[in-house]
Amino acid sequence: MKQIILALVATLAIAPAALAHSKAETTTPANESTVEKVEVIELRFDDPMRVTAITLTGPDGDVEIMRETGLDPVTEFRAMPSAIMPAGVYSVDWRGLSADGHPMQGTFSFTVAD
Ligand SMILES: [Cu+2]
Image 1 (cartoon, rainbow, N blue to C red):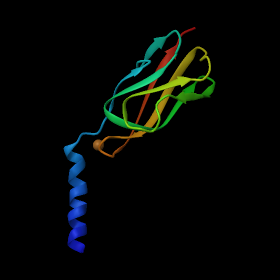
Image 2: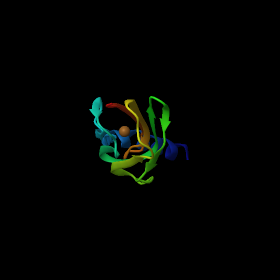
Image 3: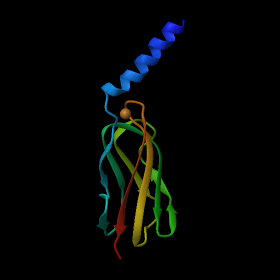
Image 4: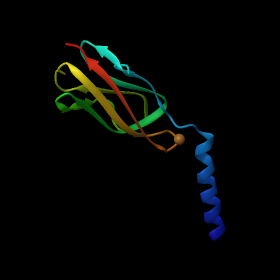
């Protein structure tokens, strides 16, 4: 029994190395960009990502966003701000599970112009 467990542990330890974890390739708005307004927030991944949490923080604190993408792994995640976003600097923080099972997180920021 102990040998079986050790073999299983070895398999689990090696398997993720064969697959690279997914990462965010590009976002909308683009990182460090300045935009007139924000109609959609998109994250594009090189491999499917299950986005488990996402927050949008602006000059007045957290902005509520509505997910269009559910909890399925996707290469393109979409959400919409639920209110007009006043001018200022915003950041998006997300967490997710990569296709290889690794927990991932990322952040990007942009400016909404006056
Ligand atoms: Cu990984």
